[in-house]
Image (cartoon, rainbow, N blue to C red; front, top):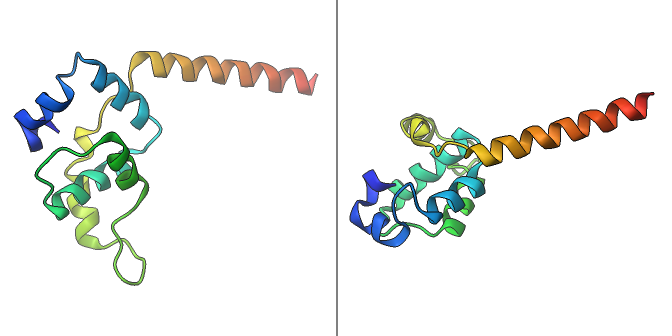
Amino acid sequence: MTESYGASWVRQFGDVSGEAYKTWSAALSGYSEHQIGNAFHSLLEEGAEMPPTLGKFIKLAKGLNRNTEGMITKGAAIESHKYLQRALPVPPEVTERRRELARENLSKLIASLA
């Protein structure tokens, strides 16, 4: 986002050590790289000059670029691929929480089979 919006992004959300980064990372951790790539692509297509809010970005991540028949357009898929490498990494605390939940669920499953 800093590459796309420069100082506007930093003024609005701070740098990667700030709270906004953690908030965005946690909120987007459940989305695929493809969904995040599509959100970036949508912002580029609409020519947004100001950084989006987290809520708007999530709405864009939930939707896909579709043509009138409801199919993902080839151009959208190709363009979105360019942005997959820029997806936010999953914060370590989110990864650890996912591991804890997986262990808990596995323990419950094993107990139910016994």
